[in-house]
Length: 451
Ligand SMILES: [Cu+2]
Image (cartoon, protein in one colour):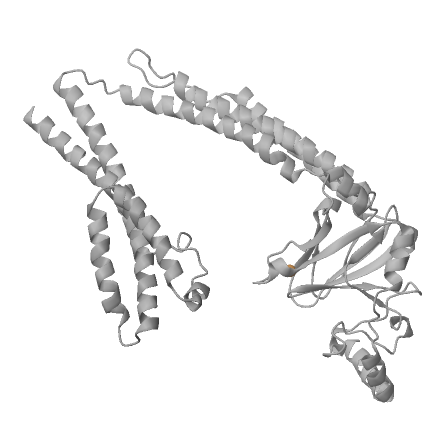
């Protein structure tokens, strides 16, 4: 009995220590922030005072707060916020980071120690429990099995709850009506795949976690040795193989129907070029002649960042789009290129995504079926916009690679296009007029080097 009491005392002490740390940790963190503030204020007021001496009294007050009870926590919190107005305006500018976001090292060390203490206390309580059972002669070695199996069953209920929550609450976030013709095919494929996956996910987890409970080790049951069954092996090999084959073929034929477009339809579509680079997209419309001027990366200059060859007269009317504007219900063919590394041309609402690869052109042809205005009505959001994003993490400003996409009527499209600037700016025209002869020679050399 002496031994038992001793252990209880230890766990009680550990528990008290843990509770104390729980309150002390945030208090000390806020005191540290406060100390930093006062150090700054004093430094600003009297430059002779060093940061160390200013922080020293604050440190001793931190220890004092940690020693006292939780009442001082709220007191120190409020005093922490009252220090800030006392500082000058320059301090306010410096202190833009919320101290709650930018916690110091002491806080994390204390948090770590606290978690360790909690784990240790739980372990101790558990071992005391087992010991008392053993002492009283009531110890059942199989009881732990029942506990573990029960916990797995609880996990199952929690897991299924979260699956349901995920679909019910977050499902709609990934679900918007497709705004293109082919988008409906992709959505059908997506729904079928999701339904199959969800059925398998739920069934497998129910079987896995209820069986661990039903067939847990018990005193009166002996395990049944079941080494092999050909029928089951066949079943769980053939059924998934067939299902996966169907899904893969389904995907293959859908992708083919989207990308295999007859030559005449390719040509009659509205052509738009997008050139990705770190970290922007440039959009080129072919102008009145419907043809893009030739382009060669070797012609890239500060003025001609797209590398357009102005010896090709079809380039002269090429139009630069400040956003992507396309007419509704008209096939559009995007030519997708990259200047530097791999980017990805992605318009989620259109179910369009394809990589922009340096050195080659990828194509995506589709027909938008909903205008931006109609989509805004559907979404019940007057600010809603289609957006084109880079879907390949390509560097620090990757997030910057987006362009607004507007789907409008044919008339609105023509009006917008007429207002866009040409690539062949006046500066470029002057440069071109001066060096026309040279340029032809240069281009001949380039053409020769490429062959
Ligand atoms: Cu990118």
